[in-house]
Image (cartoon, rainbow, N blue to C red; front, top):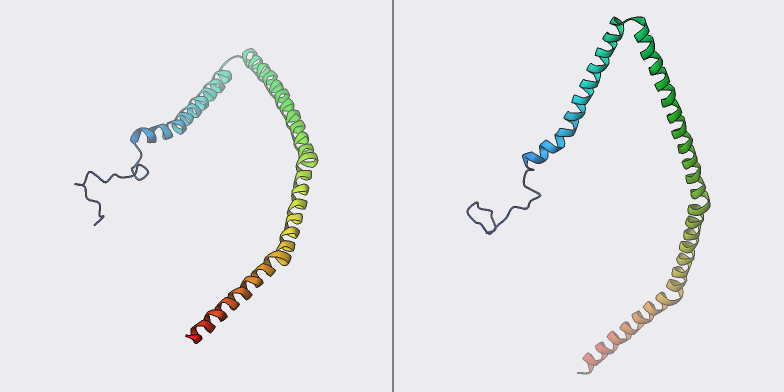
Length: 152
C-alpha cells in the first residue's frame, strides 16, 4: 500500500537521495582544474625564462643568478625563523602537557578510583541487603497467598 507511484503528489523524495545539481559538480571540480592550469603556466614561464637566459649575454645571466641567490638566502632566513617559532611552540606545548594536562589526568584517575570504591561499598553494604530483603518479602507474600488459597 505504501509503494511510491509517480502519480501521487503527496509523497516527496528526501533531498539527500536526489543527485547533486550540475552547478555543485562544477564548483567542486573547478579548483583542481585551476591549480592544474596555474601549474602549466608556471612551468611554461620557467622554460621560457631558461631559454631566454641561455640566449642572452653572460652579464644578464649573471645578474639574474645573483638576484636568485639573494632571493634564496632571504627564503632560507624566513624558513629559519619559521623553524625557531615552531620549536618554541613545541616547547610551550610540551610544558603545557607536563604541567597542566598530566595533573588533570592524574586527578581524574584518582576520582574515578575513589568513585569505583564508593560504588563497590554501596553495592556490598546497601544494594545487596535491600535486594535480599525484597526477595524474602516476596517469598513471604507468595507463601501467604498460597495459604489463603488452601483455606477456601
